Image 1 (cartoon, rainbow, N blue to C red):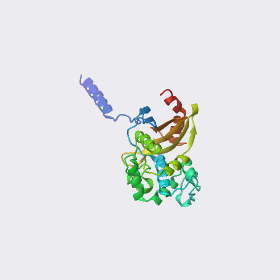
Image 2: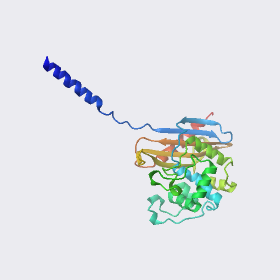
Image 3: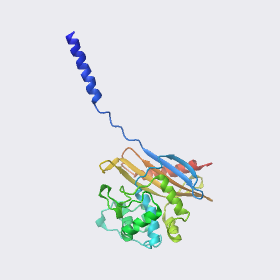
Length: 274
């Protein structure tokens, strides 16, 4: 009997120890959002996912930067200024080239954005962001030791939701931002075009990066991809934003390419008969 009690006690202890072990860590769920609105009326045509939470804009911020650049006179036209690449910047191979406004938007050249904001200066950058009502309007920098003037939109202090992205672009497209008409026209002229099915012409800008963990370090398991812009078919004009935050690494192309390509492929079906 005593032996049986010892066996039972040992079994009970082993079960308790097992139950005290931490549960296995599961990958966080992906975050997705697609929102499409009518440019003229603001009516929501399609909306699905987490569209209200703010995230880093990454290179989608090249859209408002272009508006600022043309409005301030720093940017001149589609091909001027042409700025020479400085090898001391040690940028990735794809960015190691002389760049003009069209190349900047098409190939998403980060150093060109940073040269532009340096010419703008901290006060003008912050003033434009505030007057634009862009996201949380915070260009102070800080997270990850980022500099506000040159990195606030890159995994730093500035954040914007997909819903705010489309509302901002609607204000831009309908002439309700405090910039000149020429600045609006020139910005539209340098944004890349993508042909979708059923006669849709899509213009938009990608953005890619990662979330940060609680310690402020880059979390490479949480890549973030944006594609935002507008689409035209005949007299119909729609504005869209798609966000995808994955729960695994992307080893090859940036996640923004997948975000862009799926939006272009999905778009006609999402707005058909709506």
